[in-house]
Image 1: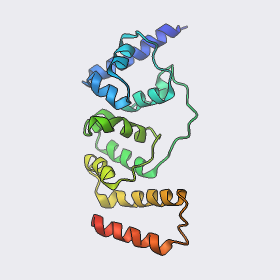
Image 2: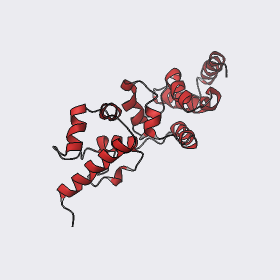
Image 3: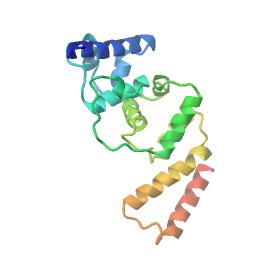
Image 4: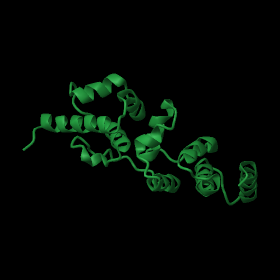
Amino acid sequence: MKTKQTQKNESSQKLTDFLSKNDVHKKDFAQMIGVTLSYVYSLIDNTIPFSTRATTLERIATVMGVPPEEFVEYKSSGEPRIIDSGVKFLQNKQKKLNMTNVQFLKNFPRQKRSEIVDIWRGALPMPLDFEYLKSICDVLKVKPQEIYPYWEARMRQYLMASGIDLFVNADLIDSMFDGAKKYLKI
């Protein structure tokens, strides 16, 4: 039977192997998962116990492209997962490009990487800011026309959740989206 120390060593080794194999700098990895560089060094050196915090483990697993259950320390947080069809669409495009999560994330400014990791792991929905969404689409070679239906559906959800009656205001909402399509040249 494996002891907890052995388990922690296995997780630390798994992380070390991933960083080495994928030539990921520890600083880049720290920014991708939203922690400090010293924290990543502590995980690798096993000077602190490997994280048991669900959010951190899910971010680590997302960047590594593995299910969080591969880490013995992982206990499901019980947080609801956002199943966003637009994000799933983008993730499928990423798979078709044979692009790893690390390759994908390296295309973004460092300060945006952990937010994108949270979108990819289902903790955040697809961005409402179309320019931000377009920057993600550009990396994945997705045309604005392809993502627009998902964005419009997400916007409608947002408006409804904000208390706007989509049926009573249908003409206004339709005009707004017609204007958005013209502006975006879709």
